Image (cartoon, rainbow, N blue to C red; front, side, top):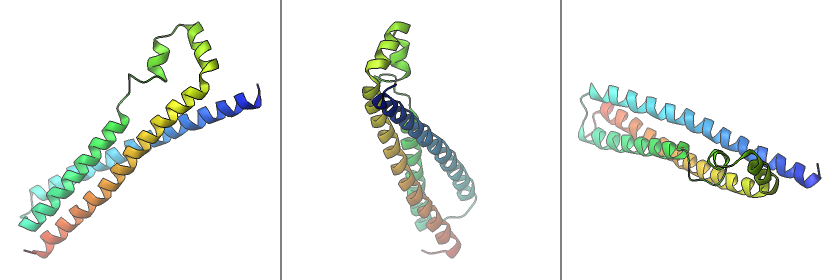
Length: 148
């Protein structure tokens, strides 16, 4: 195996590992966002909220729902993609061997674009989760303090 081929195989493995890492983070954050949404709804349902708490809490919940949407979008399978399972499912064994031997660099590029798209969705979801959580904390403080 030549040095270039070795480097391509290592890059391919690195990109695939990054996708797995991003998907794992996405799954954990989605579970966290779901738990926060369920907990906030349960608590808010039983409390007498003032207008400011309703507004802050409603905006916080909306941001958390938007974060969940981004996370779901990040994990949605791309069956129209040129790389991975959909491609392999349409080829014969001989065609797979030929595609892998000549298109490893193209596969790395495609998987890298996929990884960046997933990472971008995850990053935006983290930002929305932080903002939504902050608004929920503000709503709780407004409820406890009785402001407005």
